[in-house]
Image 1 (tube, rainbow, N blue to C red):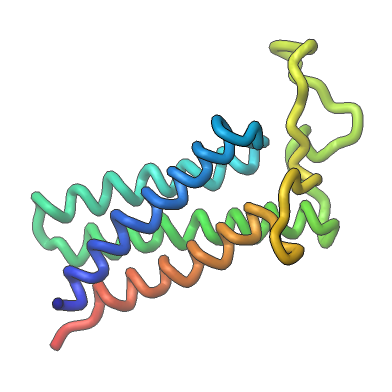
Image 2 (image 1 turned 60 degrees about the horizontal axis):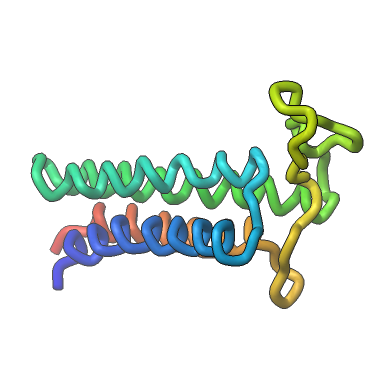
Length: 148
């Protein structure tokens, strides 16, 4: 398997798996996303689209590398979000403020960005996204750039 084939597989598989996990946690377990959780999903959507373009457009390496950068971007957003959850720095959105409400729907419950609704070994979902997406994004870009 060439580096480009592996990179393309990761660029399609990693964001698809992470998005699947996010939607399963949301709809099966009631872990609804906050605003910053959504920010982490958008680059994964982009990565899947860019990796798909690499199947039909040339140069495929460029599209796969861009997909890897999108995955890496999601990881960096996840790292920022995890820092907000752990109280390392303040959030920049209304969902990280005490007493915040959704002005469009004041009766709707607001999912707080600064409170992790679930952790495993002390790592939140945003923390896991940081770890997985950062490593995978770097690997995708490295594999896409590698030539024999």
